[in-house]
Every structure is written in structure tokens, then in C-alpha cells.
Length: 310
Image (cartoon, rainbow, N blue to C red):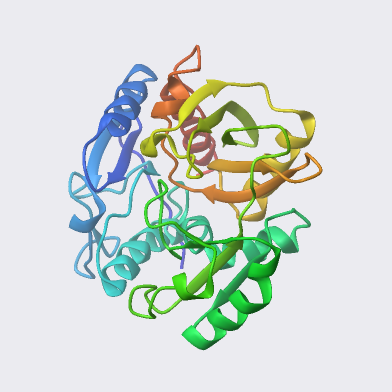
């Protein structure tokens, strides 16, 4: 049953969910203040389901009322049960009619690389060939069949910022099931195109159905995340790249997303990942306006529209 929300104040109170207060959270909070909202930074791990509360939730900073809107910056580390419970809080807020950016379903789709790849392919988007196995025997069979055509990249099913990536050139390099945490997500390695001596890909930030900014990430090694030492450079994406980023964001149901693209052998973009809680510190270095300001404005547009329909 959807409850009717009432607002006893004129300044929208926006919960910014995170696991730590970092530069991104501070930038976003300042941008929300400048836009006329009151940000309340909350650790999602501190929230609870509590049926004695009016709305069935206990959210620090919101004792007797719900947030007017929510922006999710991070879920935080934890056991499967802890992550499930935090996502449950986001699902509950959505059920109560609170705008959540991004909502729990989009976060689940983006975070689970296997589901993300499935949905991207189903939407007709090109990705590197991908194989997901649940046993060592299955993974070794894939390696024996595919490695003759070139290396594979083993990625954590839930991972970000380039951590935990492994380049698999031989079957013997596959880790144990314990090290792989029970799932082998293997994706075809896309090498630099002929004549290019460096590794590079593109990050496009999408918000509200529009391209916000983009950068090319250049690196001397095959992992191209800025946190891993890649160099960002401002770029104007092609029409084909813009289309791929927008379609990928829609396919995973995200309002705001960082879409990673890489050029295939024919030069056309392949979608590597869609990040529902993307950072923008590297992108901000090559962008001439406040990205946090744009994201805050887009989020408040959704919140204001939601309030107008109550």
C-alpha cells in the first residue's frame, strides 16, 4: 500500500546515502545547498526496518518524516545479508513514493555484472564476449575453448575502480573457486587497436537521459581506471558513443550512470560496464563546470516533480 506523503517544510530535505564522507559526498552536499535543498548525509548501514515507526523505517536525521528524496552514493561493504538489508531500505523508500536516485533495482542490475551484461545484450548493445561460470570445471572449459583466440579478463562479479581484475592468458592462471568467490566472470580482452601503443577507453556520465560529460582514460597498462593511475583527457563523444551510453543507461534502468566504453576492432563502441554509483573526480579535472552541481540539479528536478504530483 502506497502512503500519501505530506511536506511540512518548503526546503526539500535530501538524504545522501554513503558509507563514508569523501570528496564526492562533500561536493554533492555543497551543490544541494547551493540549489536550495538541505542535504542530510546518512550511512545506509545505520538505517533500519522498524515497524514501530510511522513509515516502518528508521533513518538517522529523519525521526518523524521521510526524506523528500534520496541520492545513493554508496551501499558500503558487508555480508550478503547486510547488503540485502540495505537494498531493502532503498526498496522500501521507493514503495513509499520517495524518489531514489538510483533506485534499488537499478543498483542491483548495475552491480551484478552478469545481469548487467545480459540486459545490455538483450537491448541490442555490443559488449565484449562474456562467459560466466559457477565452477572451476566450467571456467576451465571456457578457457580451453576461448584462450586460443586471445586473453580473457577475469572480473569480480561485484567490484569497482579496477580492483581485482586479472588478465588470463593460460588456463593455469584461473584462480581457485574460493579466490573467485564461487563465480568466474570472464570477458574477452580488448587490446589496443592497430597502431596505438597505449591502452584507453571512455567514461561517459549520463544523468536524466542526457550526456553530462565524458573523458578518455589513457594508461600504460591494460587497467584504465583513474584510481589505478590512468590519465583523464576531455573528449567529445561521437554520436555512436553517445547513443551507446544513453541506451546502456536505459537498459539497466538507471537515472544517473557512468558508462564505460571501449572501441572494438571495427572502431565501434563496446559497452564494458554501467556504474550506478559512479565517481567523477577524474572527470571533473577535465570538465569546465561543476558536475556535482549538474547532478544535484537533475536530482532536485525529479524530487520537485514528485512533490508536485502528491
